[in-house]
Amino acid sequence: MHLWFGLLFLNILTFFQETRVFTFVLQNTPHFNSRCLNEKFLPEKCVCKDNIAFVALECTNFTRLDDINKYFPELANKEHSMNKLVLIGAKLPFLPKLALQCCFTKLTIQESYVQGLESADSEFMFSELKDTFRELKVIRSKYMQLWSWEAFSALDSLTLLTVTESDMTLVPETFKKINSNSLSKLTLSKNYIKYIDEEAFAKFKKLMYFDISNNQIMSISRKMFPQKDSLLREINFSNNRLENLPEDIFIGMNNIRKINLANNKIKTLQKKAFSEILEKLVELDVTGNQIRCCKPLEWMLSLKEKGTSLKGRCHSPSNLRNKNIAQLTAQEICCC
Image: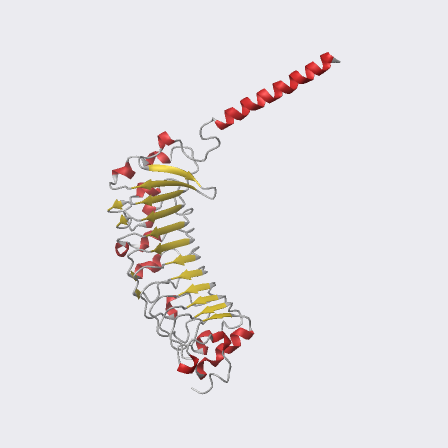
């Protein structure tokens, strides 16, 4: 009996010793199951960050094209899972093709001075990525007015494009040459945009979310957007200088659910502009405008009956100033 217990104790002790050794090996094995490239193969000024949803190569303070041309060609020959390139604090005359010939499906340029791409020839720039490149973000960067947007014409899988907090002052004619096959989300917020080409977004038939808030836009037109069977669900025009909306602005946008017009200079909203979308509209925000709550606005009373979230207050007449529009009655707006 004593012998049996002795053997059992010895087996248990051996098991725990082996477990501790195995645990130690796992904890002290460098880059265990890492999707990043080994540090010794990374370009200078770059680190790899594994964020589960993507694996990013983050590079800071590139000031010479040699920073890219020297190291980036080797990335294509190494085994890794890096699929996003992040450039922070770059100061380059252009982004060279060599930066985009590897494996990146996403590109973020942040707090940088980049005067565009090496070439406007999209087939040349994205020859290795034209079927896989999906996302471009430019954040707090300069020289956006020098970019030639036709360089993105060959990107069949581009789904997201963002330019925000940058020095973009207009949306030029070349913007409509961006590949429209897959683009579903477009954000051009917090820039200095005053002018938009009249058909700038008209070819983006897959566009679902559009945000051009916090700019200096004074007018918009229906021609800017897809004309038939628009998939647009959310539009954000807030914090601009709009004084009115064209009567046909939402015609054909039967999938619209949310419209944000907050903090403009709008005085009235014509029923005709909203007639085709009233039944499906979930949210309308006109907060911070100069809304005159009179008879022409009576149609808006039906929105609360349909369950639409209506945000905004009357600016005039004086007896209704600051009155919540969603709480207006037909008697209150009948006499001005």
